[in-house]
Image (cartoon, rainbow, N blue to C red; front, top):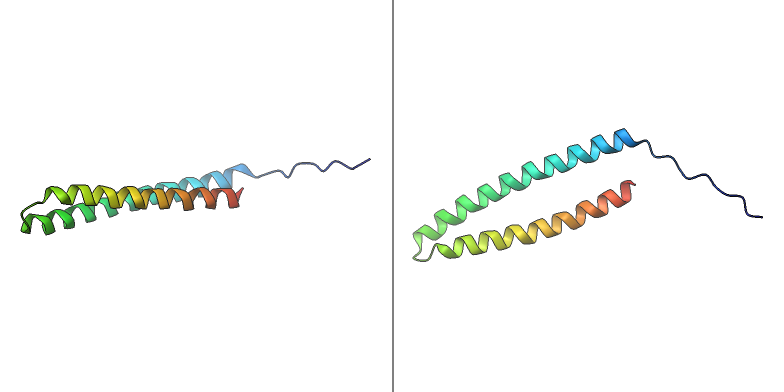
Length: 81
């Protein structure tokens, strides 16, 4: 008969605190990046005639960055577990 291995116990709190701090930090970084990009794009496009494109481009860039960031965050969490 095969010997059954006990499942590896995970010490939950250090992981929870580390991942929580990581997610909070990434959210702050995302908001700061968004505000910076938005202000810069708005200034850039106000010089041009159609600054409405600034909104579209800014949000498209943010969505793409958020998708990439979410992918890397999920990979990081899977590796940590």
